[in-house]
Length: 474
View 1: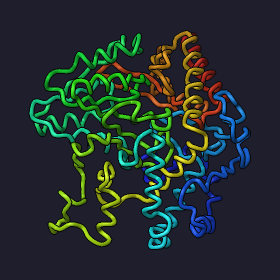
View 2 (view 1 turned 45 degrees about the vertical axis):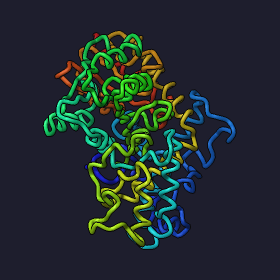
View 3 (view 1 turned 60 degrees about the vertical axis):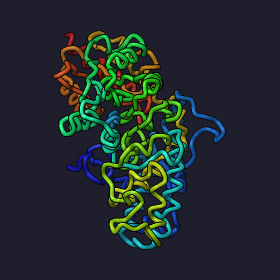
């Protein structure tokens, strides 16, 4: 069985392979010959519901507009009858994004010279970088494309100069992909990992964001050089007060690295408003691009302080022969050496995956990032409120919109979290996941409410949980 770890961005367990048969070789070549380099040409969005969205172009969709969001859901190639509620692990690409990636693979494999000269060229990459910068609220010279969040977290963790005994502060509800690089640096270089304990029930959820700010402030010492923490905790869906934490850190001369594995594509982001120094995010989750895609934001005023720890470009402006780049090499390196793009100089890249990022940005911009966030929050509130009103169900996600978003974390009393996953799948074809860490006494189910989830599927999920909880009580 193909899994979500494969290079191709689909899984036959969840996605409809019959729909993929329409993507014929003739169709690929026709698109490439027509020069369809970016996702903008794919926004005809000819899904089951028709080619045009059921709202006027000058009207923003309301989060409870059932017809509109059904139309959006129809753009996905998810199998009929499957409710996909695990975007926090991996977001299946909508049809236009999938088609853009597959067409790019066809172009690269059938005529690499023409494809890289006329389609996936410097102009395309520049436009894509500008588009991404606008989407996340930063300058184009502050963003680099990576393979995933983990790669960006490693750049941020290892990229800044530190001395033995210097401290990096993190939390025990962060993801291991952000924490283990910190521990590796400590083991190799003698730095120190300082762990904030968020395992107390007082943090699930906290009474207010100030509790979190105070926990970070209390962990800081004169040796603290970096705060590394999640924007949204993947286990409980807690949204941290990023702006306030970063403001506090900056006032003390401490750098900040934010693990943004969840918010891109879930929330309407603005890096400059958040005020962080570095931010690592994926494009394959809520943004719904290809697997092995992500980005790394570095604030313009510190980019020269962050070393690219995986790197193949000029060092101190010189090639491996000790000379300044000339000719084609100079043109090539000039594209990447202006700001954060230096982090992309690490060997060959995956052009079709990058094209999927571009198409995913078009998909999100077609709907509007604010509208996507509003829809996600609306659905999550519906689910969380319904679960809170059920006997035998505990909801860990905060009812405070400052500390919650589109991940709903919960547990059904007496039902193992993995057993609940299996029951939902076997009875209803509803796909969610659990997050379990016995070391910190954490074991909960988690559902992701994103734009491929319809109102009917949300109702079905609520009904299924109520049914299972009632069965356990009887």
